[in-house]
Length: 486
Image (cartoon, rainbow, N blue to C red; front, side):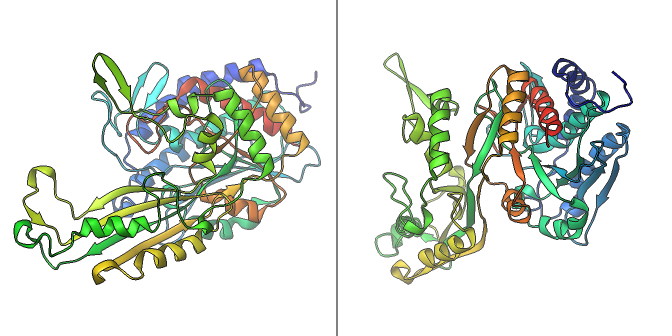
């Protein structure tokens, strides 16, 4: 075959070998350095610009990409005043007559430290153990930019014809991507006719096959605060007369959630599950079975020589999938007004504040949910206490477009080539604000939303890890799917 003529088929074995070598020799060491950087998202680091960690992360990533010398690539760090920067690259098409564009997406900002890390691990302390790279951000989502370039290089090395490819790596995703839209507006013309989006910021049902995310929940969040006094007072003097701010908090939350079942009460926060998603959920439930809920680190204790484990809300695999992808749920992710246990005296506290995180089904509009949530929580406060819901923010979820025949074939062939199993389809309970934006901006584009966040990878929590063997195979699968874009 003439090596000057672009090929049409990617050699899977060669691609996997080359990608594995690049991961081992360069990408893993780069990610080790990246994990050491506390590049927390702006929501968790108000002084991000002065601290410079986000700039360090994006500068290091850009330097590595430049060192790869991808043929024809143009790379730049784009900055708008007062906003977190983005990394943008463009690679011209080698497929004759192709006017379509592949958009590759990832992010470099991180969640905060959280507590409960294993004694030999830490959020900024990278460690490889049993083919897993532990540390904050490696899997969510620092690897994405490196994997994207490695996939492109696999195509380049084998001279496989590909469409135009652009990359957009942001640094505000963990804060809801509030800085992203101005950049999309700025770069709109340079994005081109996007026919395929590759988003490497999602999860996997297991580490045995390629997984495509077919839906994402939305989110509404804010701080609910209940104030009943102007200062703390002796609990023996006032209790029974002054109502506890915590009890009022419970009453207010009872308007929102059935505490016995966890079901959210407002009907407007629910939606019907589309038939195609229900069918895919049944197929995924058959594949994953009990692993859907056993993947989590359940609390346990000894009782009479046997081990008792905490229980999930359901052990039915299908219902478990739907609960975490299409049902609205409430989580309290932080609290204020509560002293540490060692400093908790006999004092009736003046206020209680909770940070609420409400996950919304993919088809529920977040802006409407936020308005309804604020009214529901604040109106007619018990005992005329001061009840406020502040800092409210929301991001609408996402339901994938119908899968084009070429895309379904490409996903299955890539999954078979690198995993020896067909592609699986699964909804995710988290939120990627960009996906809803891109679906509106490019309604004809296919969405390859995938990632390395498989069982026990624990993004946002302690002991987050990147499953290195899965990441290598995923990188190769992405290259093959790109090569098959018509």
